Image 1: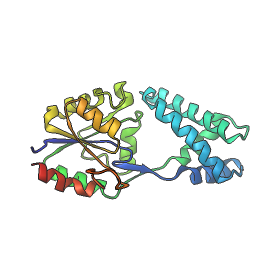
Image 2 (image 1 turned 90 degrees about the horizontal axis):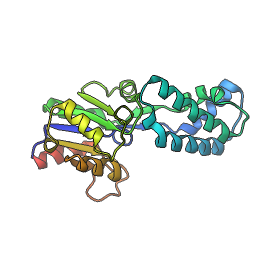
Image 3 (image 1 turned 45 degrees about the horizontal axis):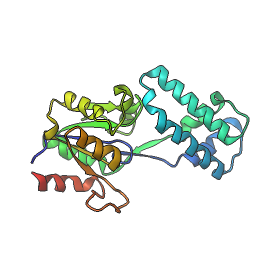
Image 4 (image 1 turned 90 degrees about the vertical axis):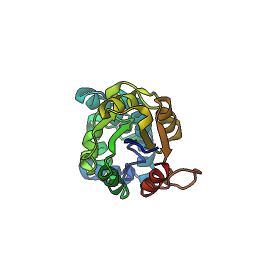
Length: 223
């Protein structure tokens, strides 16, 4: 069937993050005059990112987002073992996090938009999701940007998908979700009654899209 709408996951599907540890290392030196070896920065960032992923849904507005960021910075400071406060480390944590759009994302989105397909993002993200998409040049063209934090539920819960369907004004059977995680994207979309396609940029998952350049052909075959 031809889909009237396509929703996308964000991280790993449309956007990626620059390696944060070297950026953190550089920022700590520049801002605080602290020299930290790269391995310690990498370990500390893993601690911070695990905490963020587990708690991003709590950041449903600007104050709660600021609180989560400070909490993450405090954990980062502890992991770095530099006798610094979260407030001391927060600017360097901010420096460390830099997103970019995959080069295949914008052409794929443009092709779908020109074909009259409605587009949305559904992501396990805090309320800064739209700002991030704006910064990487992908925000234009989406009729809905649904962050799990704003909904109060994270994929694979079907509620974020249901919110996107309502905002797009389409039935679940008319909508395809594209994402890089089988347990959250594929399972969540199917729980909402949608079809789903997996993106696996490593090329290891059988039947998955290698990247978004394959999406148009795959949709054409399904038309």
